[in-house]
Length: 547
Image (cartoon, rainbow, N blue to C red; front, side, top):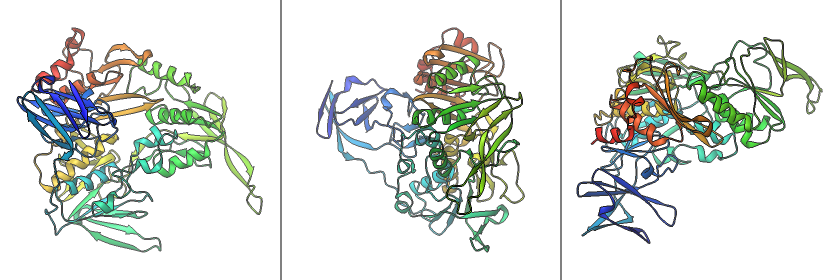
């Protein structure tokens, strides 16, 4: 039983079994999470600091509490962050044991502050203000780094949550200031020199040196004790005639999102690409309800075809069509056509070219006022002197390229538990930041990349499809549930053998099962096809193996 009082909650010890956890929602909408190990009870803020999920609805596996939504993981012993997507750990509260009950006092927090007394005479330069760069700086400070940190970004905005551009900002569901990582005062509060609107033209790894271009055409060099290169990726522009005319957009940055948001009002929008970015843009613009029409063009016969099966793809298409999205499949865009318009505000009244539509290889023409290219990205490795590899930068298990020089995020071809690969997902970028900061600090308590697995999610019309692991193809699959009702989990394999272990899974609506699969995959015990077909209890097994 529970009894809510001001700043306190009292529960019966028998409510929670050893090795378990339970959350208690309070009248002020706060949540208290209590864990138990034998006779040891601990209390934490029960809302995931990333998006507010009730952690009690997640899964406890050994000393890990895993968020049901985006798989952030926290240590049951002190609430510390073990795995992003969250960027901070849980607040821990004091509690009092009194016979058969424990009482939690949420006004009494356990102080976990760290003295910044390590490497005080060193300078770390971080190139790139995305997730990997932010997380490196953030974890360095929270891990006790006392040296100087300089974060350099080409953008005019402090580090922000890039995935939410297409998931929330474009839809009008989240204001710009809510996207800032760590809040508006993050850099100041953490004594980080944030240098925006600066272009790094070259990185010299052997010298741990960068070259910065100034607006006046001059350049300057800076050398660091630790150099972190996290330059991210740039949108890939397909060789389509007219891709460079006014009215053609890509979505990668805050500036891009603002342009698309402003330009799409009362306009006929064509989106080229049926990957998760293309589908998220379609969803966001449909939710904003400001466009005249939205048409999505894909080269294949389904959406997200390299990720989910045809059955799941069809369910997503149905979801979009119910919201008014038009699809053209098995289509190749030959040209983005242009029309000449008069520039009303131009004193010389000169004509300018603007999007008029797209012409397909079939000869069909689709009228459009703006075109959004969702055609993938390419790693920005061009500034890395002598290591410009189009498939990513080869780094070691700690993301190190040279002694004291690290390459991470979208540009890094690094090892994880699934093998060596380059992955363009937000959580992976944050994982890289955690690992890099730990490497600089010499902290062996933080899991290496080889102990981690990839995870991403896509949000469309408020429905979150989540994917854990990595599969080359979705064709070798087992599907449970009904995607049409947005209630399924699908497992992916490298082949059709009964004894092959699943390497990835996706879900809508079966979050605990995906968390359990992720934990089993992380520990090297992913289920086989035969086990799943025989009714394998994946949640129970994940908990058993973690005890």
